[in-house]
Image 1 (cartoon, one colour):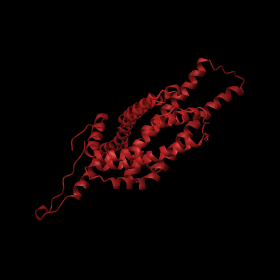
Image 2 (tube, rainbow, N blue to C red):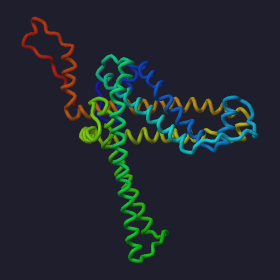
Image 3 (cartoon, rainbow, N blue to C red):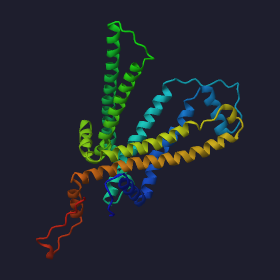
Image 4 (cartoon, one colour):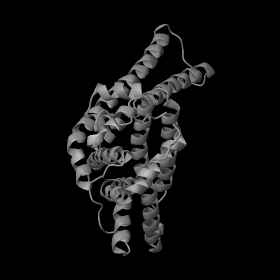
Length: 328
């Protein structure tokens, strides 16, 4: 296996090598989980538009006929669609994370990666991933609530002493900006510390607080790489999301007919790019996990065990031991 540096380029290079080595396998997982997820992220903004616009839009898009203004809009609950969409995103995200992480972990060692085994890994990792995700969201919510409560407490304190607060005052704006910066900084720090939590859940079969603590330990010495990966994939996916938000044309353009074909073409292109980015993001997370283990001296023993499984004792091998590979 080629040697790579413990930096962002090394992680991305190793990720590319693993994906290329098992291209058909990762393509199947992407089509099954990531492609529907990417497509939904593009289509959902159009579904969340006003009912009349959505009704006319889908008639033109799928039936290629001019919309009839006499057709009344379909009444839907305002919370039903976001709830169903949230469950859909959660389900496919957890399935993609479990299967891709499992495949990348075994591909790192050069083991045969079977599609059925990757699907089975979802059964063992889905609920631990969901429980860990819920726990992290609770912690983040408590932190945000604490910052908000502190801000309200300070505001009520000034009001109690009869101090009139000028919202245009420079000091007030500076205080609000300081609170926001501290909150965002703390959340980013926690995101870096917990960046490997999902991989720990899948690979080491832990859940709850254990993968969060384990991730915080492993990421030591690689925080810059983890932060760079968060910024890289976050910015790229964010830019794609901004481009996708402008895909839905207005009703006047829809009636002309050609806009629907342009929307289909743009949707296919953006869906493909977003699927690739999501695949690399999950796989690179698993590769970073292996690099962090190597940095902490945990990978050498696992590699020795991997070679020991295939080691055959011959009559003239008595007294000999397999060589141990150290990753520096």
